[in-house]
Image 1 (cartoon, rainbow, N blue to C red):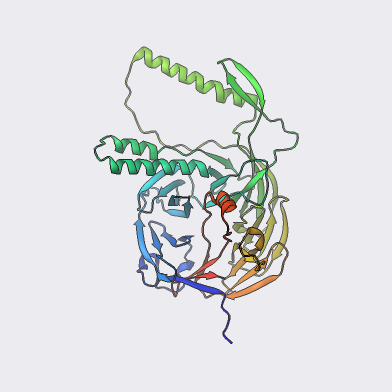
Image 2 (cartoon, rainbow, N blue to C red; image 1 turned 180 degrees about the vertical axis):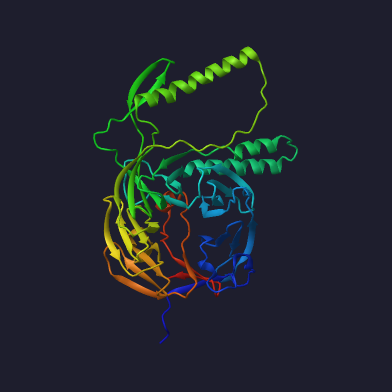
Length: 464
């Protein structure tokens, strides 16, 4: 009887010369400076000062180079690439890079810099892409987001804002290609690509600096809090309206607090004085500046302003778990955002209910482990796959044990144990923007899958 295998080979990178990344040495994928971002048939690998994009033309085919990108980093600040993630829309696919100086860079698959923006001065630890769950009915409209995690800081970009910037850049690039006689097109394109993308930013270092964080979803406003917004009318009058601002829940982990949670507000100020200053002062200053230009008619030389970080919005601490010497290390969020798997320095894995903010499960004896959520088929009789045919599971990669365990959520048993060679890394395709709408009209549901990249053999495999 043939031995059953739980892995399917998809391709190999052994045919490529990756010596610049450290390939050829045993366990080269374990290098903490080596970042990987995976998306179906593409793999992005970065090593501090450059990144490579590899592609497969079809399954079981050897990988080939797509492009090599060397970001323009600051040598004075010793800037380097600290985070990497794909941004995949319906017709656009780009690579997002976070730097140690707090800059967000977006590159096309041709290696062109599409957008550069300062988020906050500090090392970007993580770029997290996710969307709201399509199972859960919420009063608010669904949202898709890109979260930037900096020590003690969380920034949130709306997916639709990023998509508009990318579509505008690609449209300008296409127009310039077809209209080569346009002389001033270059300056216009630079202005479009460098325009900042709106985002919210919160300070979450109440319980110490965080090493990883995630915005888990929308949550109700604080109880008995007066929600008012002041609108400036006719340069003199104010009226009071009901606020439509949303609140988000954020979970952070770090060295001082293994787990902490915050309620994030979209407003930067909730007081009458703050609203008055935010509405009246800018309008008054703009009026005075315009009047002075009309009187003096002076032409000042234009200087490129230095990028400044955005003011923080309000973050209200909710709870905190301090258990010295336990330190939080990695955080993995479920697709719906209702569960979070957290690894710590004591070799434990905590399963956190992000709505009740309660640890509902605990595993011990998994040092240096990494976790990913995966979906397992349970209803094999259905011809057209829907989400209800799958159950949510947690894949735990224990490199010291050389295995990957699959546990059924939330309190189910261990259903599978797969041997995993030393020097392997567990990967998962990034979230695809717009998939919530596409999934409702498609006939077949695409579940969450887990992939393995073996650094020694160069083989890429998918967990069945």
